[in-house]
Image 1 (cartoon, rainbow, N blue to C red):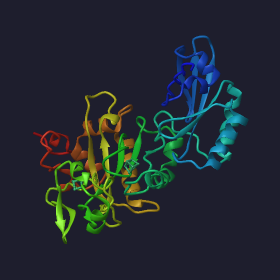
Image 2: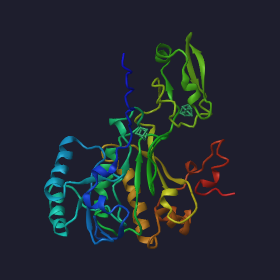
Image 3: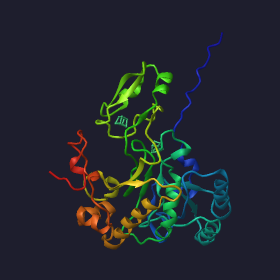
Length: 358
Ligand code: SF4
Ligand code: SF4
């Protein structure tokens, strides 16, 4: 019998990006001389060989239905060169090599109801996590918060009036993805999980969730003669890590799941040493469908930043310069006990809270 050839392994992962690039991009890879910003939402790249490539950026929500995607692609086929890409903040970018195509392309995008902008020192699209649609542990919607906030920030998306670029993020749980921005809007759980003992006994023989708790607050226990779990509520830091692997440990609820706003941090710091984000507002109602309380605070922070930061200062650098007490005054936020990191394991991180320094 003939020797059977082994099949080649199927490589998964990121596909080769060159096949999707605009031909001018591909030709000039590594050969760009400079780029400029002729107007908000438009970039012009010039290569050493003289080629030009124009990029027109428009905002989208991260989770797109197929009809919207088709509409965006049709614009790309008809008014651009048939090449698009998405930025990590869900902006779509059309690429054209002919300057004469730029204005008709902008008109087509805007006529279809999309907004051109999000470049340079604007408030670009909020990057959001997946929320109810894809994930099993969110405490709030993600795209809904983004849509509500960007509706209010539309003028800052279309213009470039901020001292430097502003990146905002939302995260729909406390522990996993999201949270990398100048301003981060994160879910905040405010009470320990509630255990459905009947369910634990029925679904799990040896609950591995015990190992999941960062402060060892969960332990096996016999409840009403059945094996279950108990939570030491004095130890629990309400992180929500136990809920994903153990649905009977429900932590979300309409009253106690709140939003918190964090600012600064590494992503908000163009020149200084690495820093953590810091909590500036806690216990904000998680209030769909428009989240007005969280949006109002974000707008106050942006207004103070726009009015008092120096050119090129990122949000984190601005706060470091004016000082945290002045920041709280400017944004009219109260400083409460929730701003102090009082977790027993926080010796190392205490110096990253807004006020306590030693
Ligand atoms: S932030 Fe949390 S809940 Fe939201 S998508 Fe990421 S892992 Fe899921
Ligand atoms: S919420 Fe976090 S700290 Fe509390 S029991 Fe669950 S895993 Fe432990």
